[in-house]
Length: 176
Image (cartoon, rainbow, N blue to C red; front, side):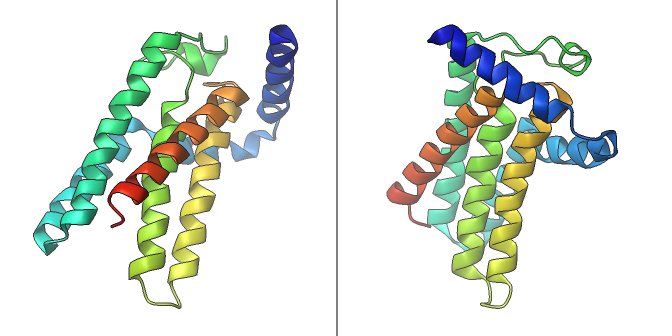
């Protein structure tokens, strides 16, 4: 069963990596927006703004994002799944393990939180546009990691599931 899953994972990953080359600039941009350093910077700015506005519940939610990012890193170091053998994966500056995808995890958790906040705090006309924009970004970040060759499909799916779990936990505990 394990080997059948690995074969399916590699086959589906290969199909996504065969998408047309003209998508590469879009995928590079999406991958950049999912970089843990970028998402950490957005969380930091969000913390500064939420504290400045006196919104402690949003600030606490963002602090929990940092904790969750640490959990994702511990999982990577524990599970130690190797990355795909691609040119892109071999050129990654800070080469870590593949499962779960940190980009997909951070994007789901942070941009999912942004989608929730947009639906709660923005004017009705803009709320759906922003909410669906963030959802699209979550999907695009994950797909970009597969397309570029940094991850297998199951790495991205695992990052989304874990990010979704932490987003749910943040919303249940804090409800910003």
